[in-house]
Image (cartoon, rainbow, N blue to C red; front, side):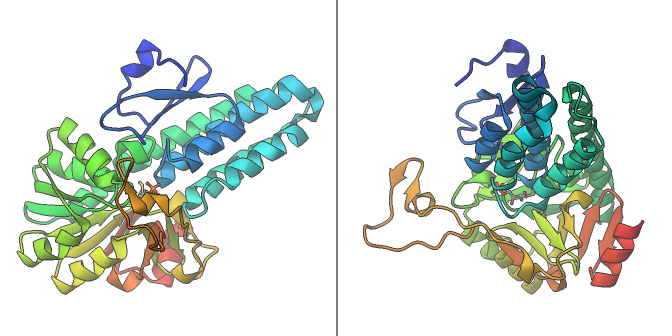
Length: 354
Ligand code: MRU
C-alpha cells in the first residue's frame, strides 16, 4: 500500500486521480469506513486494481484502463526503447482480461491502441498517450453533465426515484451517470428524495451511493434489494434511474445484478425506467443482450458479508454480477448525444449515427 499524498487526500470522492505523473485509485472496497488512495505503477497492476474492485463502474474502469496503458507504455519505453510497442502487449492483454462485462474497458483500450498504431517507435510515447487518457477522462465528465441535464428534463413533477448499485462520481470520471441525473434533478428542485437498493453482494448502494448522496445533502433512504417491490407498491416513486455496463444494439441493458428484477417490478407498478449511460457504453457489435458476456465472481462474495462467513457450509453458490434488462422494459436511454425513448434497434442506430 502506498502512502496518500495530502493533495490527493483532498480529492476525496474522485475515483481516479492522475497527479505528479502518478496514478492513484480511491480504494472503493473499504469505503465509506476508510478513504484511502492506492498508487499504481504499471498496466498489469492497474488491471489488478480493476479485477479486485479497487475501482469499479463501467466508465471508471475504462478511464483506469486508459491510464494503465500510459503506465505500461512508460515502463515499456524505459525497458525496451524502440521495442516499446511489443513490450506493452502483455499489459494491454492484462487490462483486457480484467473484467468482461463493461464495454467501456474495451472501448478505451481500442481508443488507446488506435493512438499507439499512429505513433512512431523512436520517442517516449508517454506524453501523447497521457493526453489521450486525460481526454477520455475529461470527455466522460462532460458526458455526465450533459446526461444530467437531459435526464433531469425527463422527470415531470417533483418526484422520488429509486436507483440500484452505484452509478455516481465513483463509477465514472466524475458527477456520475444515474447519479448525475439525480444531482441535476436535485439542483432543479425536481427531486423529493432517493431510494438506494443496498445492492448485494458488494453493497455498492449501501456503501457508495448512500455515501455520495449524503455528502451532497441529497436525501437518501437505503433499503434491502428485496424491499424494492414493496416500496414501489406504495406508489410514491416516479422513476427508476440506473447506469449500465453495456447496452446492445437493440437497446437491451446490462447492469448490476438485480437491475432486471427492479425493472420488472417498476413496470408492474407503473414506475418509469431510465438508463443513463455514455455512448462509450453502447456496443453496436452485439445484436441483443443475449450476447453480452456476464461476469460471474467467486462464491465467497455471496457466502460472506463484511468479512464474516454467513452462508451455510455445503451450500453451492451462483454469483452472476450483472443481468440484462430487455429493451421493452426501458422507457428512456439517456446518453450525451441525446435521449432514446422506448429503445429499438432502429432508434439506437440513429442515435449512434448522429
Ligand atoms: O461491479 P460494478 O460495481 O463494477 O458494477 C457497476 C454497475 O453495475 C454500474 O451500475 C454501472 O457500471 C454503471 S456506472 C456509471
